[in-house]
Length: 136
Ligand code: UDP
Image (spheres, helix red, strand yellow):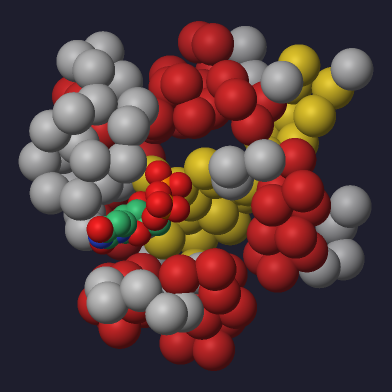
């Protein structure tokens, strides 16, 4: 019944002091934080994490941005955790994400949209292995 998802509070979110806001929303929703770490990603790890976007025109900027400063990596657990966090995060383009969501409340630019959340249970399993190889 329970599912896990990998969430990142991206460098813009950390810089802007939004760690507490994001975690408060996660906990208020009822999702459980089962792993958490503040770290700065190296480019190789970032490229593996975002491998599905390797051919997209924004890939270089995406890797540069995600490695630009510390981020918070978390594993959340709960019923339909993948979908539940994506609903909290809002649409990828923050201009289109609904007010009340993390991106809808805090962001305007697609490249700096505060959080990442796995898009499927399969992606979650792959991403959790990248960020927390020995934990689960
Ligand atoms: N992104 C971007 N430009 C685009 C599309 C995506 O900079 O045109 C960035 C954006 O920060 C997004 C990330 O690439 O969060 C990954 O894209 P994806 O489509 O997987 O969106 P997400 O799953 O993060 O909502």
